[in-house]
Image 1 (cartoon, rainbow, N blue to C red):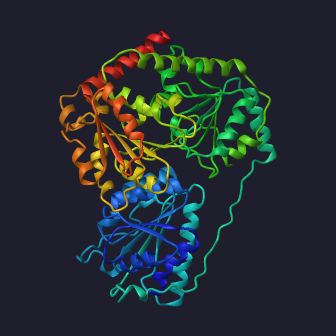
Image 2 (cartoon, helix red, strand yellow; image 1 turned 120 degrees about the vertical axis):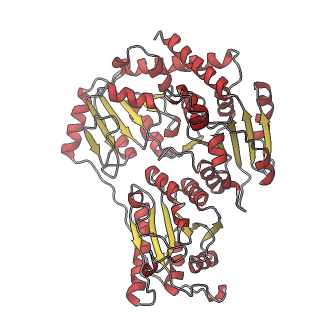
Image 3 (cartoon, rainbow, N blue to C red; image 1 turned 30 degrees about the vertical axis):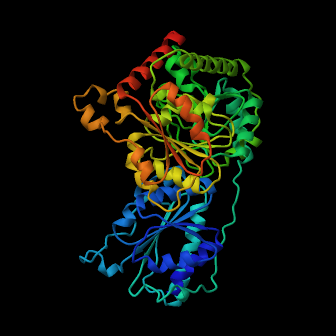
Length: 561
């Protein structure tokens, strides 16, 4: 088993220091090797689905690959949702799955399924290790594969890599002291920076100068101070607006943060369409923004991505620029400057901000829209804010102006599922001393309650649970809300509350169901008490729908649409 034990040694030398393990028998040799290695930190999470999302959250915070290890059979399938999320959010995970010898697949043997390429095209690459570990060529194969897998996971675009490891019995060491690590050889990958050639740069500069209306649009980014500086300088020098949602993590002078309000209210949308759209980052949240750009297509669309790949999200992609965005923004200089175009956008943004402020100053019935606003407004700088999918991330998209600079905003927008939201926040909290806030709906919360089922619960996690006892989004979007089946089969009404979960897992529990109680409980949520906390905010789906629709109506009245 020396070659298997040495996997832990290679991971340590390559800087893969954090592992999330799930208990099992077939993975025993690697489990013991990882747990006993002095250079590795390991945590055991029984539920593999939760384990994978915790690893994802930990990798997000540390900005380094995190290892996952499970036994053979369906355990590996439970990693799938997080693997897909990591692939589309470009998060490096090293997935190690123990397997039965290949001759026993499909032979009615226990915990044996078809594990080769089990994640399909949602991993950057699949590695199958040899069954014979004693042969010198096999040992070389294993060492080479582990180095290559880690290098690949960290290469742009970062992402998950799967290593399947067939193991024969006996695989339990007689005792832990029998686990020895020998000298290993690792393979390093030197990073290279792509540059635009002179002719390509001249062509881009000419196109830029010919475009009167230029917009910079950022998708989801992790927090990057250098990128923020580069974008700020670029937009200020060329006098162009930056469309940036909260998940872009960009706080620039020319950032337009009320884009959803503007697009919902402005009657002459065609005049807002840019001649040149420059995009970078990952996915964009706003459906109205994507619909707007698909209807009123820019003449040119540049996408900046070091991989040289680009999604044609707006059906107008004309140029792919294969460099780091911050490198492009630092070096690209053109002559075009359009102060009037920028001023128009800034004025519209201020108009949207005024509408928001006035709406919440006016008395209305209590709703989760108001609750989310009050929570976000109270968050101090240097915190981390996770947003669950469905309504929480959509609410927050209206509140970008109120998210303080220094707050890192995260959301599982790679695949936009509700599974694993809670576990991702737990993993993030394990990797930092900052306060980590999660605003989540009730279905996402209860769906992932096993995130609490571990021995490592941090004390810096704050969960704001918007409990409307169902999938409130299905009462707001067109289509399902008009169906007779909406209540039982889309909204899926439920009666659960979080107080018993808080008690079971020794979390501090807070409760609110109106504006006054929310004002009282928010300071308690923010305070340190040595425990993680849940603030459950109970509201009515019907009332939430009424208030949110009233807000959208106010937008139309304000802009005269």
